Image (cartoon, rainbow, N blue to C red):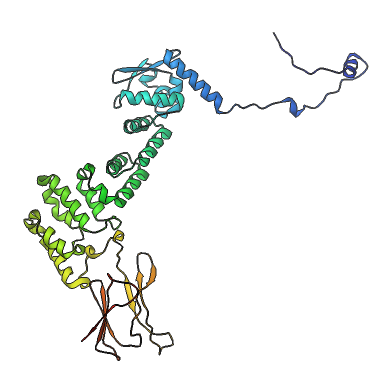
Length: 390
């Protein structure tokens, strides 16, 4: 049967058409006679839903995927359309393209079940229990959208108790962005991270990477020393030979002198490790000499609020003749200048300046030459509070 669609003619058009003496006019196509219909994603979703129903009923299925002895009836066309892995398997002249039963090793049956649910519905329920094997399965079958969703889920789950394990997982699977996020998180929360079981399972090079970083967030350097010693004592026989390399990254000169004497030098393991004596000697010298003794371990970590700065004391105007009372410091890391305390006796000139640990001493000069002023960095940043007369 042929169905012809047209529009109803009015009387004048009908009479004209019936009259043989009148020629027929050809009218141009009216754009309103066509309608470009698009139902959007509803159409594809409906087809996928039907295919999923076919899969459940084993209708039109032409391949069976076997994983751990469990069989999954599927459609080659659907698998090939979703995964380049299956497209290469079924569309080339491989043995699997002709066989009804295809066995896949190296994945879990429940992972295959979750994967097929995503293939036939476009949806997946990612949980802390299945995210790892679901990621590995989507990586194997080259489903980038599902793999990226698993990586984003892991990033949202970062916690002091799991960030190190997630970082190792990310490193093993070349997830550079996720590994970087884990590392930043662990550095920022090191004080908490160091108290969890995952910390004790770190490899030596991983622990050294953290303890050597200037970005390690600790309130005081004692936390770093205690974390290292906890890691060593966790497996003493295997890790004792690594003690020197690990303590090399602990900034022992910045430990409180009392803590250094009582805890560090009093530790039985360190006392019986002659290879560590040089590091101990360095810390003792710094406690005595202060900033006159410099090494990579005397540089404060940024989280402590301290940094090595260049201090400029006094000076005069460019035209000369007028002494300036200003004291400023420059931070090479941030590139910023900051104002410090002003010199109380700003008329003094030709004075001597020296540093003792984190304090600054100003002495001598043409006027009041017997005065010694000390800037105490631990007390105040608004004035030079201490004056000592000789």
